[in-house]
Image (cartoon, rainbow, N blue to C red; front, side, top):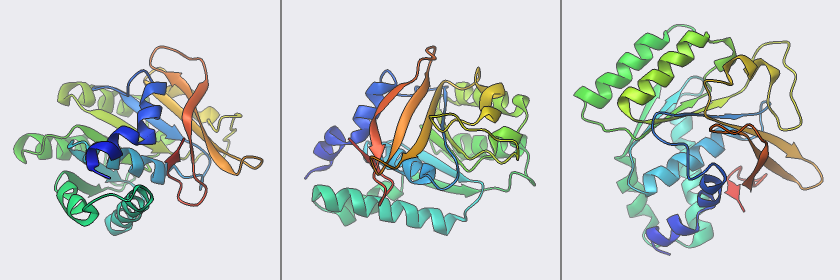
Length: 235
């Protein structure tokens, strides 16, 4: 299978359709769930789709080290290309790595202003025209609303999409039927697309539900689920 066909047949196309064509430049998207449901793998799948389409991504980890995240990319790419019998997979992977930058920060020790300053330097002075930023493991529910607004403003100024994967850390967390924590409620107006993930025993899969779709707050299926073995999107 050629890259173009892999892109066309990707389950990410179904997911994009469920959120009116995609997240969009200047917007914030959030994948959230209880711990261990597959958010990082899902985030990596979204990033790989961007890379295969020739876009530039920055993956910012706030928990795992860079080497661990790189292994996620390698394994996810292998799963995708083995399943689809992709032609020249090794050459394609070497090519897309040039379009990816990995960064690692401690949220407790580095403020959002310094993080955004580093990203601005990369984009403007480092000549890396990022299309999407992936905030992996960012503790949104303990961040100030002002910090999230700064990230949103930055997304608009730099004309990038920003995806977060969020596992709430406060002790008073209550999850709804879609895997959305009540502690995310104060940030809901700032979030453009909110997607909840929860494991369904009877279906043996991770269900993805779009809870906020830009201006619409009507929950609807994302059109895809996560394979419980790989945690990658499937239709």
